[in-house]
Length: 342
Ligand code: FNR
Image (cartoon, rainbow, N blue to C red; front, side, top):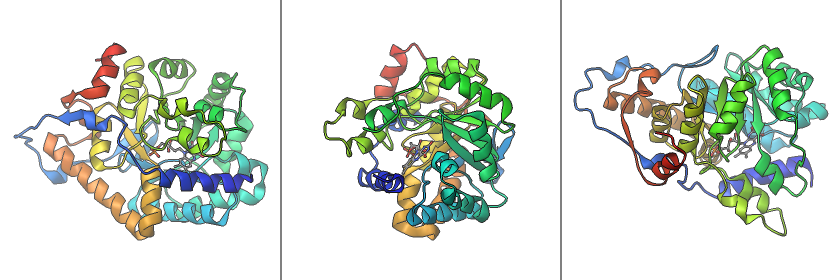
């Protein structure tokens, strides 16, 4: 199967599966504060991922790439929506474009459409420093995402089976690339143990890519004869993963992601300790169902609702949001207590 066919299948399957609510956001409740003593217009949505200053705490996470016309158009339209809403955006994995220069246009269009925006390059942990530099150069990226996707690779019939050396490669890239490096999962979550290892190897920015949204085990199983169904329920739900990572390394800048569908999910992710929230599947679905204008409207609504929610809990900044009281119930509570995280 061609690479661009596989990438299009990913999009189709991701959309077909719909979005269940398994990430743990529904386990969080805010505690009503009847005296916020602040005004809606004093809310500031800015947040920082190291030297990158985001005008709002959301970004469009890595999705498509490859050489097909449809993925080119998706990237173009995502970039237009990012530009119109002042949102940062990550491109999908650039590895195949490093090998096939004719695919570069699928990525370059993102910089072309969003010339002043914050753009993140994307490669897997098999990438070398040279490849990482080339990926950043390709789109004049402001940062680089390195994805970890072991369970996805293991589920793919033709997937990678060699996972040694990733930490050393990541450490070399972090030290020499000259832009912030965000290590990310793709929907299986990052544990406290993994977060601590990454921190010890120089990583300061972590997108936990938790379980409960886009499910790459389900997507890859669609292409297998003998299914690895055990991987379909495998992973750390997003809220638990944010708290795992923060409990292991207080100093890690964590990005909430995996199954985020609403402003309420985002604000809960931020209240759980994340500095920003990234969305993939939900925004792709919005784009394909409602077009670029629909996506722009949705992102604008989400931003406004984040400010409304921050007013309701009486905080003016994302930093203050980290300290508002929350009550955690259900599976997330169970997970955190078994793991000794409070
Ligand atoms: C992805 N994702 C992804 N991640 C990555 O680092 N590199 C990539 O090339 C891709 N490709 C990709 C394609 C499609 C169609 C989807 C839906 C997703 C993973 C994505 O960035 C994110 O980590 C997960 O999708 C979980 O977030 P959501 O979708 O639950 O919000």
